Image 1 (cartoon, rainbow, N blue to C red):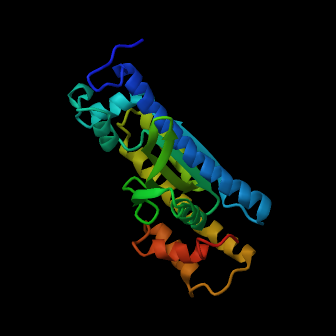
Image 2: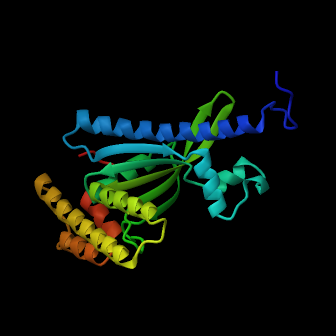
Image 3: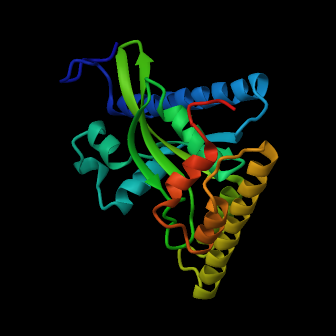
Length: 253
């Protein structure tokens, strides 16, 4: 039997770390389950499914330590796991790949409107792409994990993106590591051009999607504006336009 530690738990640092990582694993699985339920509902009860694919990943202990070092933090100097939770918010990550841009916002709404999901922060890199052309909708959400010792709130990063965004991000990731962050400028310029091409493709596919669904009542010129926004890296007003394209996010079409 383990000797009691000063906090009375009887656990060792390695056991505490294992519990810490498991809590994030369970939180990640909670979010995946919620998304899987939505996907199955759309598949079996409705005529259209906005979710193409759901994937998840848990940072390895080595990756977590490396990220702390990149932030200029020494894990040994931190007061404990609450500090790590606060400093590193993407220990658990879930990625939702959707068919169309409006679907990404729609699924985001459907997930974050659930009563036991608490949105903490939203970073909209679709409406405001990163300088390198990266586009995605990032949401930090808090989900309750029910354990034998009580409920633990866990932060999970959820990314919503289209197939085109996923394709571009996958390529950028491979190039980033191949050149060890020192990417030639010519290649960076071509990547940015590819990002704009992907954005234009998303706009074209969105237009076709709306025509196939037979939607009407859209604001005049909205899809044309979406095309123009894609070419100019999407102004701030694009978010509202895309929400209008997706219709009422709480309604299952």
